[in-house]
Image (cartoon, rainbow, N blue to C red; front, side, top):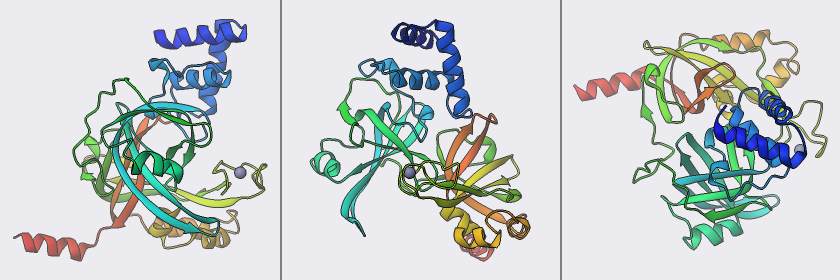
Length: 332
Ligand SMILES: [Zn+2]
């Protein structure tokens, strides 16, 4: 066990009046609860937060980006700003507003951080924060973005601060852009990076694509409806295995990307399968993808539960052979 984690466990034990071993068991349980999505160290920080231990002024206690998972409601993270997208204005039934999306980076990866309305006015438009700054988010909450990846928001209790914490990462001058994906062979993929792969679909796991979440709070719904908001939304996620000749990798697609890939709406799929009870036709549809060549852009992440890397797909397209042939002919 790392020295810092042991010290943290001792502090928790002292605060709670428990034995250190007891605290370590609690941390192990917390780690299990997240199904291997976080490290032991990450779990220790959550337990510390849960018991109200004040960690925020201590550099070593902010979370590494790889340990930030959706559902946390008090995450403290120090990171560099790699890019800022927006602000853009939007209109919904509930009114209008402004949003800016930031990509934050540390030694372990990148994560999206979104700012809303007055936060945008105060921080982005007055240029209080710019690309390359190191910032500390205290007590932010973590939701899931529309691609199923964790996204930090400030919310009511979150605070943004300047910090002296050293984050040892390079920020490229242009930052990363949504198109800034580099084509990489599967055997050379690096966890935490945005990447583009091209390969053949060799397997699709289409037998249980549905999961339910609450459209209000974004939390996973286990029963019929979110207990707090009485709402539910059915979503799809699909794993496919792609092989490019150097290696194969599992790639995970969420809602919109699954719809695009299969050419079917989530609602249609939900109906077609009799609410997930009759999967035959859906599985057939998935299997039509096998043998097709596909280009996937996404982020490489280690799935700790299975201990192997996977690509979380942001976008994908089937290889248009005519287009690729034209490209080759043009270059001759
Ligand atoms: Zn809810």
